[in-house]
Image 1 (spheres, rainbow, N blue to C red):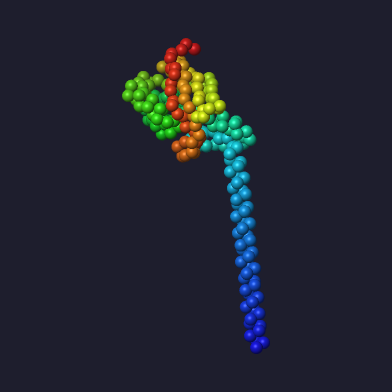
Image 2 (cartoon, rainbow, N blue to C red):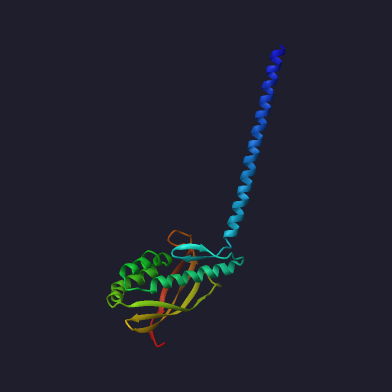
Length: 207
């Protein structure tokens, strides 16, 4: 009987020890989950106040911003500037033009931008740029965005410099449209989209 008593006690002690180990394991898992949730929450909260610039198609973080309006301004105006650079800065290389517009710029704008691109293609606008060996560069004067309405109305004021051999001519580049927030995708890292885009002045100027 004494032997059976010791065996029973050993079984009971092992069960208690196993229960303690299970409780400890559950405690560790619970603490790990709580800590992970806190860290993820803090990281998400911090990410909301980080500003980014798009360089070479990559989203590069810059100095954190604690003002959400400043963050919105950077993203919105940066998206507008980048779209204009991709769409209106032209090199005498059709492949380069197509890559910039079809693979990048058109993801930043709604069908209004696509319709403009199709019209220019039909008029052989880009073909003429290449055949004449022209080079188009844009110079930004200002971007005006009305944040009191949504989607945000904007007006872009700039110029195009057109290098024609040894000569350079200039054109106004005034555009308007609306911009709204969208989801971030691999093709649209800013998470913004231009709507109802329109060129309102592209006339020759004397600089």
